[in-house]
Length: 337
Image 1: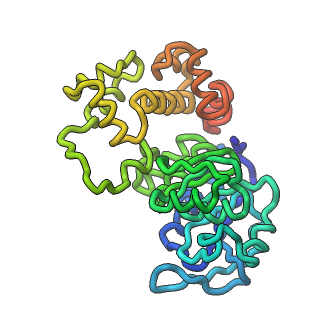
Image 2: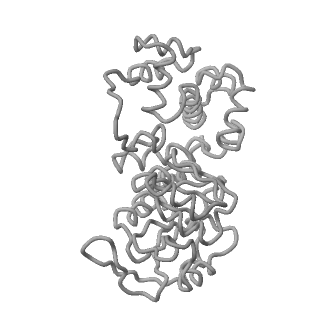
């Protein structure tokens, strides 16, 4: 899904449930609420309108901290949403224990319009699953709840090893800070890397984190790691326009290919080949947004070699060909010039 810039901001409604985590509740406001577009003449414009609502009439909502928050909107706000975000809660009751919505929560979610984009942060995925949004679909949640989540919702294809899953109109994230990754991903998907990167800079977080939850899961008997693959990754990023073999990366760290591949997966969460493809897609996106290079030259500079290869990889990653991506995400100033 790619949004054209419009006069009316995309409305994000955050559902605040009793027992919520204040940190997670603030993520959508911090990421979406600070997303600014560039209009002719350089004037900034809000790309998202972020509001918070409860399942009850306006009033206090309990948090997992030593304070409550005052939510000024009731469930009727859900009917105005283009995107609904459900952060985690420690008081999900029958949703967590039985996979069943309470009458109050079911009535609130019934107000959501068909076609609304649904997003969960951490164990907010339990709410989406109990409401049927995840039936037959891939999803993730906090790694410590993944097994319970799968037992409670066997119809969901749970992947506990990723930071987030984008399944089109339904997206789920792993625990806590992975909500930042998911929200930045949505800004990037909606409005391009330049807007998302600026928000990341303002938030002082990386615009894109490699790997998944595997790197954060506690292992009772961790294997000592005196060497890492960091140097090989930094080396590869300086030569994405050239062929990079797995054995070249392994030799850079003085490891065997087998040891390097295992260590790379432990540190990054994906294979070296998958990581290289991701980095080349990101390089291509940057070049398409910020330069007038031909598609053939972008393909060469990003390391895909040919325009055909670039088209295939961009289509697989983003669902659009290079020309359509460039047309959508070139800034207004570039378009005017």
